[in-house]
Image 1: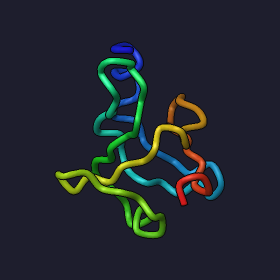
Image 2: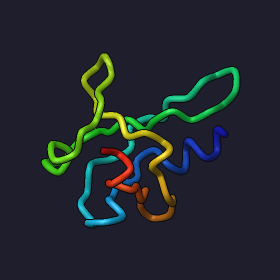
Image 3: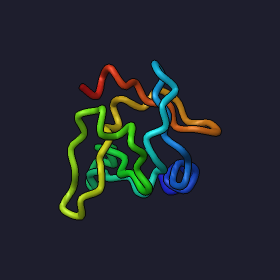
Length: 84
């Protein structure tokens, strides 16, 4: 789990459908007991974030549900249609 967190933090989040960039992964939120990943919080959100209906946390960071993450490589690819 720790290795994956280090691999994903700092990567750019990109829409699978449109190629729009949403920002950079700032943190991963998960349930400590089970290790279930809940969402990815964004740093440096782009204007594209406003076109998608994202929740925010108490700090005002945008949250992308982890269930929408399709792949992690050079970028974190998310399914924009699954966010809405």
